[in-house]
Length: 232
Ligand code: CA
Image (tube, rainbow, N blue to C red; front, side, top):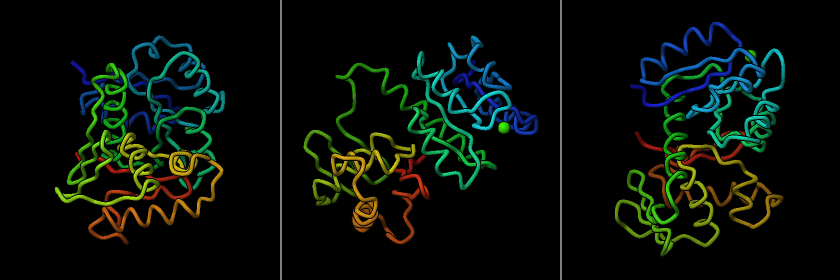
């Protein structure tokens, strides 16, 4: 039995040839669509737990595929994108993609993104009462009811903005959160100056990272946003 069904939308034979057996060996059932039309038309969409989507498809823009999927499904979409195409990644995230991995990607990283997406899907599927009021990741502990934050058991004092940023990242643990969303969470408007965000993320790192200049928990996704790294 598979641990999840992945719809891989990718036209490059070399990537399909390497990715399919790797995902298979990790326990996933994989269906491949070679272009956008096949992805949208196929019944594979109905039972996909995660969709891996190449943005550069032969028949249509990957972003249009996201639009088409999102009219009917909330299935997590992880975009496979080229490096240094930050605008494309942000546009895909704004259109409803959940995350992205850069090509050429490291399999371990891709698997971690898939697990994070599946965990998040399971949490969303639970009734509201069952949603955890407490977040624990490694030594970091957040009580969402009391807004208390602890690190290795010791209380950490955060300003309201720092707390709101951390909460937004924790609620999306393992996934990238765009600057826009973080600005909205911290300042109430997504158009606030991204420079503020850098300053506040720096302060959060001072309080939460063992080595704030080499962050291991709150990592920067250059040009896109930040990610609270999930431990496996
Ligand atoms: Ca392609």
